[in-house]
Length: 268
Image (cartoon, rainbow, N blue to C red):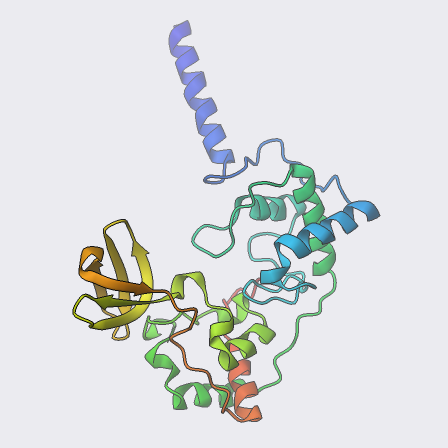
């Protein structure tokens, strides 16, 4: 009987631990919900860590960029100190938000303190364009030939269904004018040249020691044996053409339309 009790106890304990864990990351167990590092010195240290580790994606002042805006006070994955701590420490699966491996817990808490300070600013840049007019610009320029919104369009480029949640207005504008300036990791380009000189280009999906895989401009999946290739090029250029020729009104209206594409709950 005692043995059965011990086995049952161990199974229950394991289940509780697994429930308390985020996959591949830090446990929720014993994590304070209130940040223990909130002094002026902690905030300044958090600011330095943030600028060095987070600012290139989320903007120096939390205004957003490749990463979401942090200066609105609305956080998609939770706004408590503990929830923000886990997002920073563990990352967000299937997104460009990585785990943060090297900092100590104290350093992460200090980043949390600074992020919370940014969130109290409420300074998200508003889109000034007309979304209805921007939809017309989107359609007129054939954006749906590469992008999809709510399942309509192509999947050669990033899905834009909730791009207004995931990208700041400034970053949307820059991505239209200079798409090669900041290419999402999942949409890096590759060009392969066969031994016979035939060239094929597309989105780099993955590769191993023997083969490389891409999605070509038609959206078809292509695989190549490296032994049959003369050269593999990884140009730092987006497949998306720049739209620097758009008028100022068309550009701002398009940004206004893209900025309006948000998840229904509107959280960031």
